Length: 67
Image (tube, rainbow, N blue to C red; front, side, top):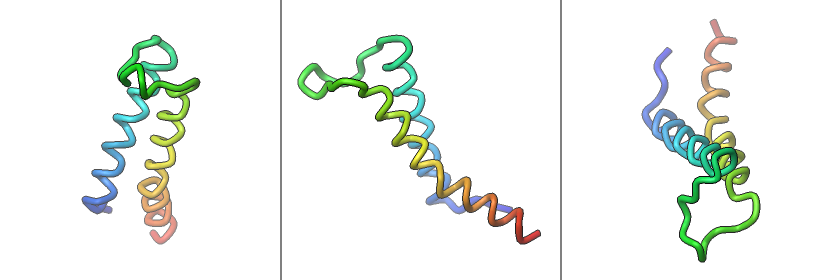
């Protein structure tokens, strides 16, 4: 089963957001400018990244169920 390109791109951005969020939350690395920072911004990046991964995961699960 081949993953469509739009889902692969979405998954790529999700991985980047999760990685940035983990760096922000666990290592206290700040990627955002001072004026754009807010409390728990790392967790928000992680949650948004997971939400962006869901379409690709659901596509794969549906494809496996049809087999």
